[in-house]
Image (cartoon, rainbow, N blue to C red; front, side, top):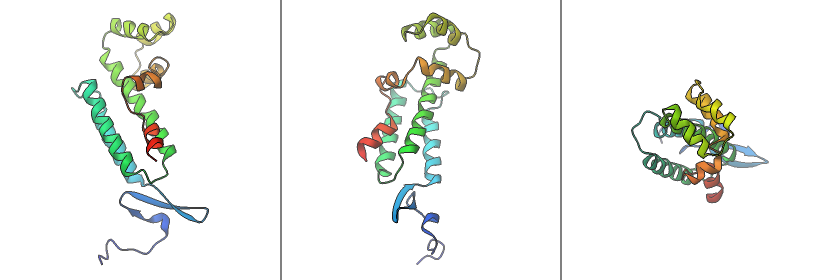
Length: 164
């Protein structure tokens, strides 16, 4: 036995293969350990960086590969809330990527009009001088979750519910 790796402790303080354990109604349950969650967010942050020279198709493919692999590994864990929260964060990053690609105000006007927004909203969002994060929140009215799904981006929560 390796004394550094072997320990006798409470079940809530154990990390094993990226899983953490907790008790619920007398039964031991799995969840994703905090470090594993942080590593997943770090990797998705790398994939969805705005300054990479990747095409949208390549980024979509890399993200789908990573999400499917990660969720298939951790599908035994109870992580519905984590997936919903991460999905929201990930969609905001995707919106920021598209906003950065629409560099000119003229392009922003054209694309926002194509998304069928009111002219007042188009003018307000297209001329916004806010940062990418704030503008991505404003874009949630235009680039809705269904549009992002139609663009081919995978929803972590939907995939987890399908697999688990």
